[in-house]
Image (cartoon, rainbow, N blue to C red; front, side, top):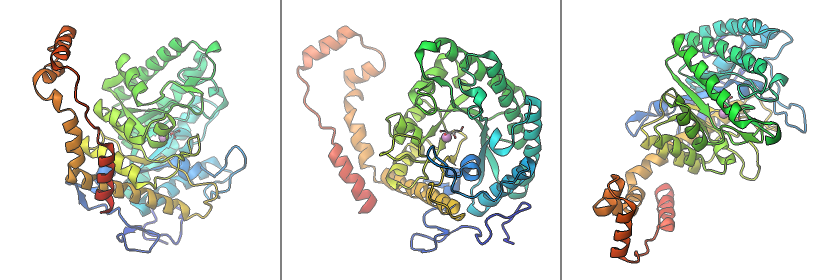
Length: 444
Ligand code: XUL
Ligand code: CO
């Protein structure tokens, strides 16, 4: 038995603790770039990231798609839900410990099973919470966030907190109450709301205003309950533009920021930005990160990647260092995330059927972000791009431009200034130069 085995059963025998061996190692089970203790930009790599495993993809995702059944074996699945839950808990803490992932995330229905009533479901979750707590204590692995699955059960076909039927909304409320209780027992650092089916498919049968008002009231109730039972972390909203509904109320970072500010929820709720959700909304990952950071509301990250040739949420493991470099530039300049971490909301491809693939995927994801961090730091140290960007706005640093930024001018002042200065000189954005510098810094 491996020295890193922590539960009752070991599911990935033959795979031991994954270590850093550096960029020249040919060991597929070693990190090439992720060196947890290494200091980059004044902070240990592991502290920059707080990497997390996603229970749902790692232990529930079986490679099935709308065209075919699962392809990936789940040795933890049995006919007894209690035994299956315990097996999954063992698998979770085995994988996190062996990979050096310091955190995990789960939905209520990933970890526990649904009962015949809210009280029974709550009891099941409490049973599993005990198992998780024991394993957290044995390994030191912590809960980054948990959430509820209020979208898979048929009762949620018309949404959860935005369902037109109050009885369904109350079922979702019961789930959130039990999940917040579990969070506090487990010392969860954040709590997530992803929209699920909070949106609509046809405006003909939808009262959008009423549904959005209900969502705000529901989120406020969750906040109040969480604070009452001692939850001190951040509530996070995870934007997504589509899937499963046509129009999701939490479309993208800008939409969610507007909603939180309009409803006064912005003092307790931050954003959890997912790469593939940003790209589905027609933005880059960095765009949504930057919006959240500029608002002081960048809470956490769901680290994955989409396939730009495919128009849906493919939830692939990160592998593109150029994208992670852009993301890490935003995070570094923001001074990190506000209490969150990097959760691998990512799944294996349908044809990645070897048990070891789960390890290789996480190693790749962690290495790609580590590489992104190293490159972002290099870019910041080079400094040329930051200087070019700053210089573009030099006209606002003094004179009338500076008066404008301070709010000291009116429209007549703009008229007088325009009349006085005449046609402005054309100024290049220098995009090609910047792209050349990026390649030089990365590969030079
Ligand atoms: C769905 C998604 C979810 C959330 C948690 O696209 O990203 O897994 O992260 O509910
Ligand atoms: Co996600």
